[in-house]
Length: 136
Image 1 (cartoon, one colour):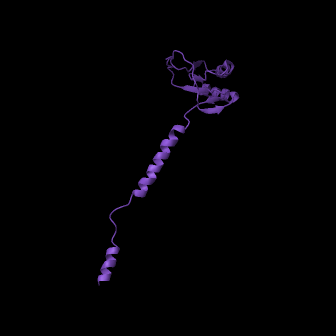
Image 2 (cartoon, one colour):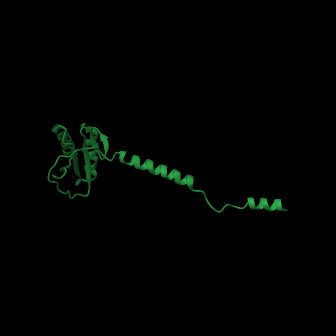
Image 3 (cartoon, one colour):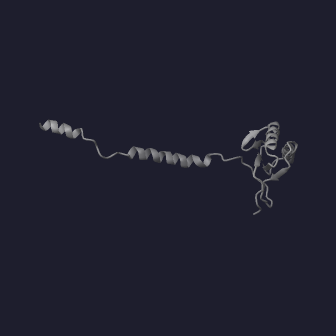
C-alpha cells in the first residue's frame, strides 16, 4: 500500500508556476523595443526656414511636404506633381474651405515650391500657408 500512496502524491498538482522563462522573453522584447523605437521614421525629414509663425484657423488642413531631395509628399505619401493636382482637386470638390500647409525644406530650389503652389491654385484652393519654425 505504501507504493500506491507514493504514486498518488506524485500525481498531485503543483501549486506554483515557474515564470522565469516568461520574464526572460519579456525582458528581451523590451530591450529590442527600446533599441528599435528611435529608429522608426516619423514623417518626412524637412528643415524648415525660420520666420514668425502664425496659427491657421481652419478645420480641414492638408499637409504637403517637399523634402531636401525635392520629392513631394501628400499627407506623408510620396506623390508626383500630376497626382498632387488630382488629389487637391478632389479635396477642393469635397470641401471648398480646405487649406493647404506646405512644409518645404530650406535648401530646395524656389521653383519646386512654386510648382506646388501652382498645383494648389489650379485645383481651386485659395487658402495656402507655408510652415516655418520660430526664430530662436
